[in-house]
Length: 446
Image (tube, rainbow, N blue to C red; front, side, top):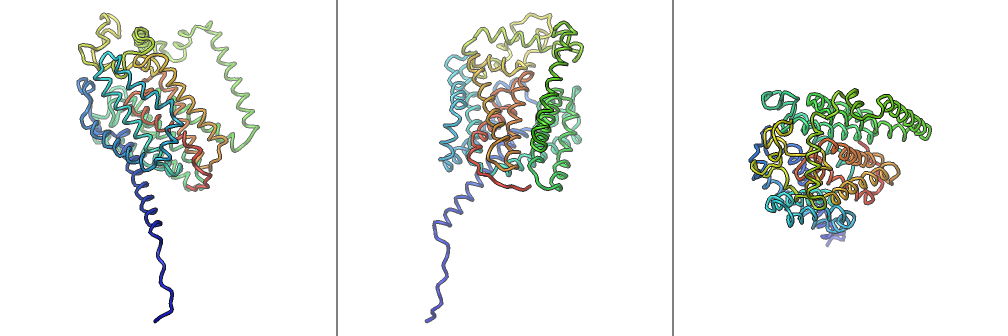
């Protein structure tokens, strides 16, 4: 007999562990890909949503969301420890989502509130599943940049192939229902790319990032979405200031503070020139103090919100309730808002007024504070957190999106509005940022 030692294989427990890790990674990848496809492409790209369909909803959308929801439940069970921690750290967000669901008890249209609040619950669960299964911030950031760049190319190719569908009189809408959504997605892509490049360590990666940014910048410009273009400029300048502060140190920070004081002084002087008349200043600088007629819409929304000051009309139970019950039916013809075709307007064009209409002022304040707390937490992690450079760049991306979310809702209504692009992303950002402390320091290289 041979005295040679018998080959020793890996323990069975090790094999099981490898398989479990592989399954967990597969679940995360499929869930993230499905979430991004649903959010940024949708089930029916380049299609118009009729007023009737907005009321009833799309069966295909329901099927897609329900499938992702079931997958998210499996993912949350697989990562049960991270799930429990995620739940505890996000109790205010979970409570707010539950309050939206409970609003069917006093809703003007309980059936609509039930369906629309369930959509919010499902999408929140999907975001939680992605966050609970996340293992690598840099890889997560990279997949977002790659995926969003693909969406930009799809928009540009689709616009070239079907210009009659994708191009409107007021700007390019691409595969979306309107140009403002198209501009928003382009803005998110630009912010993702700029922050991604801050996390690289090789010049070749910077060149690749700049090349990938070109489709997003082109699409952003041709959408003619003034809000998204303006916010993109503000965000890129803010990111540049933070990057320079990190590279150049305290002297640059002091210089920025001094410049900030000069800007404030100049603004005060400008207000003084116009006798502190805000309308006159806006007319002189923007050419339209009414914000393209939105002031009349805001006044109507405020009056309607005050009718249900504390609890609102019910989540999802104010707009898109059918033509006969449309809230604008109350208005007399003769004004811009009263003469708009019923069913055309389905939001207050201000996220804070919109959410107040749905769930009341106290819940709206709580929602804004939840997002603001996420911004503060993200800034602390990005500036002084125990993370690698690439991970801090990813945290910076998520934090900037939440900050823009608060600003964007001054003129658009996406604050925790079920199914809207920015709401889906903001909830995911909140969950991921709450897990920032779970990620060990990594010296990732792009």
